[in-house]
Length: 172
Image 1 (cartoon, rainbow, N blue to C red):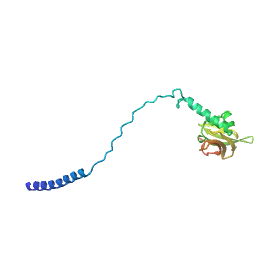
Image 2 (image 1 turned 135 degrees about the vertical axis):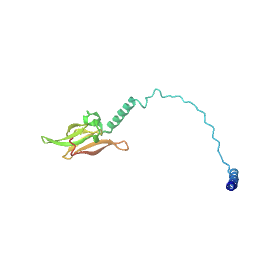
Image 3 (image 1 turned 60 degrees about the horizontal axis):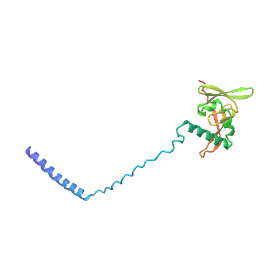
Image 4 (image 1 turned 90 degrees about the vertical axis):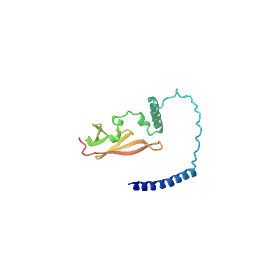
């Protein structure tokens, strides 16, 4: 047993000395370069001078923005008639929340049945649907054809054609 302890202790000391010597050499050869931190700039307080201005979070700011947008749209001519007319109930809802569920023929005039918010509405050519000034141009057995007025990426008002197709099997 003593012989085993002596052998183990003899092997352990020689490896540690070489490792310690190598570590000391490495510490002496490597010199870290640390750049000093620059002095902080002094704080100079600024006086807030826009207390009298309109808050960007107020309802009045949003109202002004909508009025300005409506005025700009009316100036383009494309929306002049749309902005000044009385809004219809289905213009308050997005078009993608509406579903065409049927078609009626009243004295030769086609009337489409549209479901929105679990209510059924009758719409004719000339009525408006959706929030993009969507005017109904035609009603067929399978769809309602609409002309919408939307802003393109450049902010210009343009017309686009869209449709609301008949959804079969939606009579819940």
